[in-house]
Length: 99
Image 1 (cartoon, helix red, strand yellow):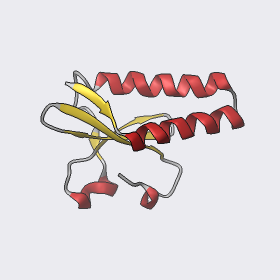
Image 2 (image 1 turned 120 degrees about the vertical axis):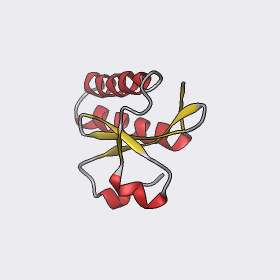
Image 3 (image 1 turned 90 degrees about the vertical axis):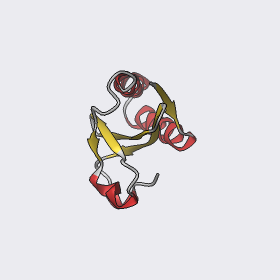
Image 4 (image 1 turned 30 degrees about the vertical axis):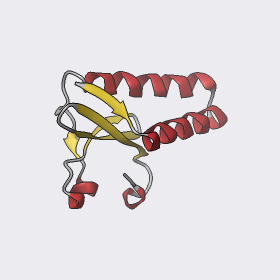
């Protein structure tokens, strides 16, 4: 199954990378992004491995999540693809999660 990133999710990933570059280092930022991509690649073979995302259950779209460090990678399993819809810092208020 192909893993497809939404424009929003990629923008969130870029934003977290920029933040870590400014607050920590390029090396730290790169490592986090590499870890996130590694975990999402596993969804190609194991699309249902993530837990359901309770903060988005009200939408009824079956959002799932995998956690990488402080980040939730939120996705949906569609007929022929896994769609990454958000990368969310779990230290934030979950009501800020938008997909």
